[in-house]
Image (cartoon, rainbow, N blue to C red; front, side, top):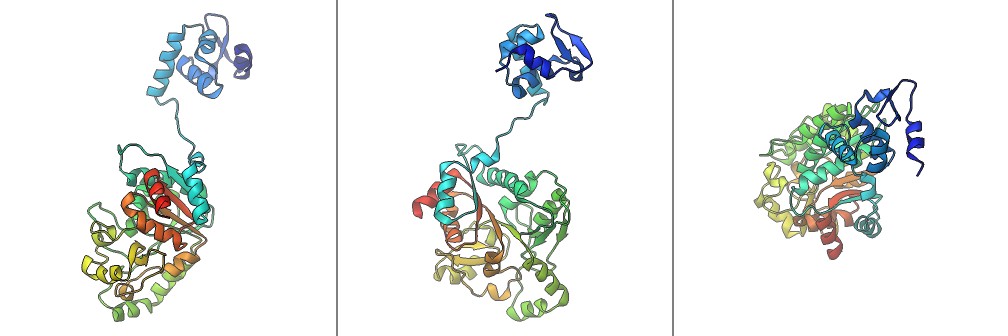
Length: 338
């Protein structure tokens, strides 16, 4: 490392002020030793003794300056999310299932819910994956809502965020598919394309009649133009979102369970091998199909919790996912069963 005087010289400017030991401090720091100490420590990687010499103060004063800098939000500390993709679990999932990308977040001992933590990690990954002119399909989910809440604002030209499943009632969490689309499009300053139809109609005849309407056909053309899709994965347990949203009920799901269903994506049931199981709900559902999901180039799943192991394993085997964000315990569970 270069000497302290050399480091200080790198940060010099035309306007100076003097410290007690004669070393000049840049006026850009506005006479605030906390800011100078924070810069030298975190940016130039000087140690506390070197900084004390530069500032002409004791090492204890430098410790106080750094503590005050953190308390006053002079600095922002973050973990590079791209490094999480290189840990062994993520690499093993990529290798096993041919994923393009995978992020596995470390276990926190149960301090926070997987939904919130995975949603936040998903926001970080999504931000790095977006490009101008993207058409991003969005299926609802608790992790999708958490992701939307954690997105930072971006301005990418000519982007669409598209609702890929019709509307259903808001859950006790207070969200629905159109709300997820609205929030994501707002954060990304993108155009929102909602699907103006219920997710599930009362019968096939009514569904077919609605799908024949010109406006609905135009909206489905937008869905089929998606080059990215973002979705959660539902289990078939009684507390699953697929039931809480009113999309279907436990009684109707018995048909799918009898056929070996293990999970649900965008309202569509599939078995342990990822094969789409078509049944009574499909006849009245308004939304993207699993065959159409598989045709989208970038398929981002944001899901976790060991209760979803079977559902996520089936989705991976069915090639519905090529970018995955999950948690450590779920990743371990998936690999053990795979």
